[in-house]
Length: 275
Length: 275
Image (cartoon, rainbow over the protein chains, first blue to last red):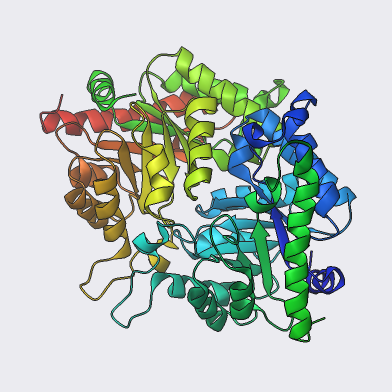
């Protein structure tokens, strides 16, 4: 999906919502257990009630790999189902990062075999671990900038003699390697001042923002810090949508949770004259 | 595999060799194409002629994920085949790194579902992305320290005001989080002075060293810089073994390449009184 298609989608759906399908078999409502493929059936039910509200879906690879080849089939089936519902950006949350020939293989695995639009990448190995994911029209590399977990402090804030911090170095350099049509950054929601700093360093790049909801990030603060004239944000909610309710209530409550987020986004976008 | 079992294996086989099964379907000899599962058949042939020479096998996940669910089955079948040949450390070269609940899922996917002994990890997200892989007796986290690719220079050498470089910070901190019985570091072979520095920072941890051979690293220089009383090194060769010869010569030449490396390792270990 190209940038202009993504921006149109954001305007049409009045939404920046990305639903994270971090589906765990033991957390999904019991009645899905009767299905022959419970994870797939649950994902389809979630997509069914959220696809008019979400502009993106993020599939966390760990949760599928933990199921072996059945998980791989769940992943493929879920992607096909999302596609059948019309335009949505599909992100493989894989946080890969490896040298040239391996990175090329991953690009092939994710973009061509799985057929997703975007993949998350870890920057530790530098430029040749990012490059193979660029220059593929309509495909996106999403590089970890600032993450929202406790461990983010361990290395991402290391500062050089001039006071540049690692995450700033990562965002500045990667924004030069990949343009706003092909590269995004993961920027955690829990510290809006850092999201603001990421926005300064990459004024035109999209930011994928996890951590709203379950991880404690505040939606309005994220919108204030990161919104651009084109939206410029994909705001992810995983557990906040997937596990909003229990039993027979799970799916209607998931829609309600997604709708509440989409409406809050629409209000802020309207207030800023974006839509 | 525990540390003491690994050290015994190194002494018994007089080897530090790790064979990297970065198998690419278009690079394997034509006659394997007639097999119903060419990658699996090739891997088995390689394992068959190297398992007495190698103490470890490293499976690069990208190459299997690029084949979809068939790749996942290849991976499982290859692991089962290696296990059937007796003791060897099996490493999933996955370079994962994600927050707590996701990292736990990956630990489950790799250690419990796939059943490997070790997984490579990227340190960017910090402690909570490493922790879930620790404290599992006989299982190993292998954290990226210094990589041997060109992009290593982009971030790994960033230095703070005291001159500590990022890779040094990573090795020092991770060596405190995980002991020598559960954590190793990836340390590229191409710059022995950096390997020497890694050894200073983590005197008792095993180092997994890729980059000998195809990537230009020199085996003797690596042994000089990193060998400890217990070995302390796993030296990986992927393309140098897998693609040592063509056609019907591929498998015998793979053995010859592995044997040459093992013998060079044995000589140096003998000279140092290790075996």
